[in-house]
Every structure is written in C-alpha cells, then in structure tokens.
Image 1: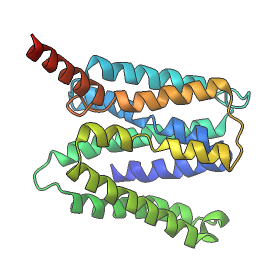
Image 2 (image 1 turned 180 degrees about the vertical axis):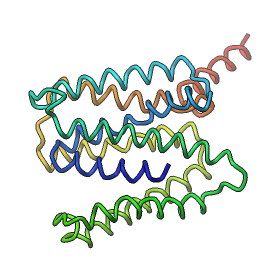
Image 3 (image 1 turned 90 degrees about the vertical axis):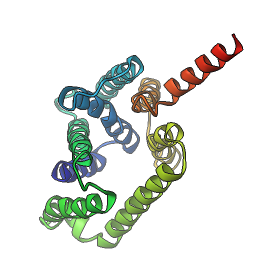
Length: 231
C-alpha cells in the first residue's frame, strides 16, 4: 500500500509541474470516491445511496475537468493523466491501508514507520534520478514533508478528540485553501465549468464519508429521532 502511495506522490508532483494547481488538487482529492468503490468490491463494504451519489458526482466532475483542460484532448493532457494516476494509486493505497488496519497488532506507530519506508523506496530514487528541481530544492522538500507530517498529526488528534461526523468531511476539504491560493496568488484562469466541477468534487468528498460518520446521514438520523420523539 505504501508503494502505491509513493507512486501517487510522484504522479501528483508531476501533475503540478505541468498543470494548473487548482485543478490538479481538485481532481486528485477525488480519490476518496474511487477508494469507496474499491472497498465495495474488494473489502465487501456496503455503500449507502448517498455515498453512491458522491461517487457519481466525482466521476462526472473529473470528466468535466478533463474536458476543460485548456482545449487539449484527454489523451494529450499530460497533467490530467498524471492526476488520474494519482487518484488510482491513492485509492489502491487506501484500500490496502483499510485491510492492514483490520489485522492484529495494527496501530498508528507501525503505519508511520512503514509509511516512511515506502516513501523512501519510491520518492528517493525518483528524487535522486538527476532531477534538478528535486536535488536543488532539498530544503523546500523537507519543509513540505514537515507540513505533511504536521497535518497528519493534527488529523489524528482531531479524530481522537472530535466527532468523526465533523472531522471526516472537514479534513476532506483540504483542496479549498489550494483553490484560494491558486486564484489569488498564482492567478490561474479557471472557467465557470471548472468552478462547477470543483464544487461537485468538494460535495462528493463529503458525501462519500463512511456511513457511520457521514454528516448528512448523521443529520438525517438525528432529525428522524427528533421527529419520533415529537410524535
């Protein structure tokens, strides 16, 4: 699973090198929808209707974003292909992670240790393969790794201290700061169609949250319980 994770990061950085950051971030964040489908097929998990709606939204939005990739066809749009590879590898990695956490002795410490090993086996060979943007920017790379690790730590802290129905969808909205940065600082042109597709992806991220933590299902259940009490 960690090897797929490492390949995903390589494809993700390649997509950012040649594509618009806002759209790359939005497309790749839709990996949770594909992960839900893989869990349905391979882990025999059941999906609620609202999760299937989220999967459909993510697929439709991805096609919309790909079709609007600067007038290029899907086959010729390199950043779009790298983005799809990222989605596939992250989804496969998450499926492996889910299965691994079901095994005896699985814990966060073991996960982080294996994560470091997997990233080293994939990212380091790529970074040392004569790529000047990697070897010449080691300090920036380490800073990015630090931010990534800090984000993971704060996510685990939020999961342990807060309600999952709130933590899960909020943590899934991480593309929003990238969108704001790309529009305000990088001045990337984003069409109305792409903004619509972006909104669809963000909605899909919330909808595909597991049923027991899904904020929409939790809200509907609370409303139903309140309605029954009033009767």
